[in-house]
Image (cartoon, rainbow, N blue to C red; front, side, top):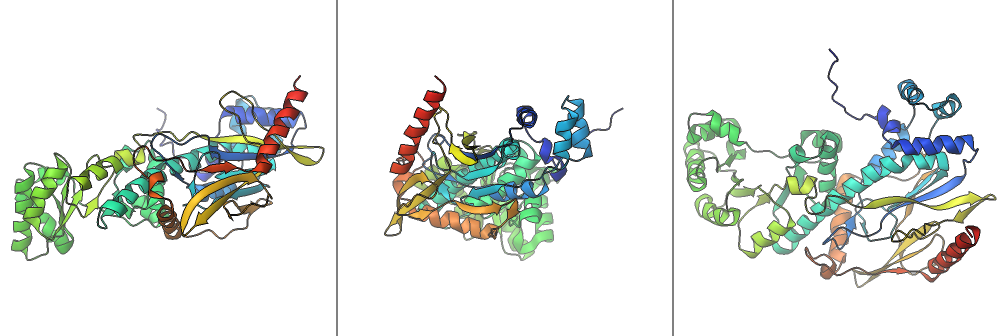
Length: 455
């Protein structure tokens, strides 16, 4: 019998966490002695539905991967079995990233066509990164954006309610659950139910009880008594296993009998708006945690209808970004070395035309608010604050990484400076991203050059 395998992707596996066609191209580059310098850009062609912005996230995991990216003996043996030739595998044996990586800081708001990252490296190295970079940046940006939308609704319509990620069990795999907890914190959440996220990233952790706790005792009261004996003032009671209002009444009675403060109650089913009001009449100043089917649309409705809560526990909708489960982020070649210099390159595919060359995004602000962004060529002089920063140079980290709390604060600060019409939960106004005169000229020149070559 073959022993079962958990399937965890560790740092030693990252070189193989790629699509086969990347290695197929890499071997072809090697065979053709075609290892030219190249620049790839990571960006959104467009944002998912009802998204007026995206929150950049996942850069730290990309940087960690670059530090550990190598082909060990097991990986090389597997690739040999897959038919890759010995000369190419000998090249991979000494693989390490030697290039440059420029990126916007995590927590930065980004818009269509703006580079989240730019990778410039020998094309064998840069090509390998595509799958991994899109996986890490695309998913975390998606979840951070979903979290930011919820945090923004709470900030504008609530009164300081706590937001806790409850979604690990609904995430599409262990790695996704862990990264979702991190990304949710970047987006403005206060913590996660996931202990590994606490250990790995320092995300604050929270937890209450499950229905199984209540069901395992003879009565609901007995389950609350045992919980109060263990956790005292910190106990939060799940009150809707049988009858929600009666459950809240029992929680109040048990806390009083045990001489402890009622820490709070949790609601996880039913008409949560109506029940929150009814339970609030019972529990007084104690906290009310709402944790079923919570997303930004629910939160908007909850506050509009006068629902009562001190905390929310979004789960499935957060970790799967339920209403927009894919990001559409792409990794596209924008320049390649010819005659010793980087020459701009672009796609002319219908509906997928790309802007050529290395680029910079400039953010224009007025009176503390974002007014517009300008997408320009790298080195072009534009009024505004440049967003892309060099974080890796000659394969080495050259930037000081912020703490996760600092990243979270950047998201909050940037949202406050983005006008409300671009932050609306539904049908937000598009934020203006201008194309600079220099980039537009470069686009036309590059297009003409390609068309002349391909005639």
